[in-house]
Length: 140
Image (cartoon, rainbow, N blue to C red; front, side, top):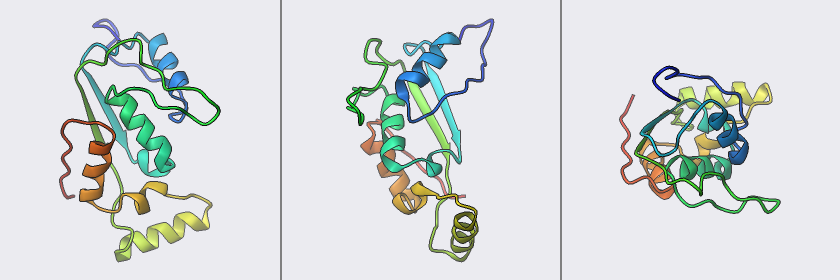
């Protein structure tokens, strides 16, 4: 993205990092420039392995093998400074969390990340484990 087009929407499967990077590249995304990644209730719907690979890619960490033999995109250009802001559902064991999980499951929707990362400490660990230099989480 450049100054004449500082914002663009792209359609991509976040589990397919080479496809994501191609879709972003088609809009002028430059990994070497400072970047803000914003995810509102996105990671919680992804299988943990896929979300972890996405977070590592966004942090500019080396690619990891994928099932089927591919590797993550982005290893040709070093990543510039980045910030990843995420708003995720937590608290699967409180009353609200139990009702929410039950209602979503009844509709065939699984919140993978809620059990894997149920609280703020687990969210901080998730980002640290993905290679982010600093991971902070604030209560709602």
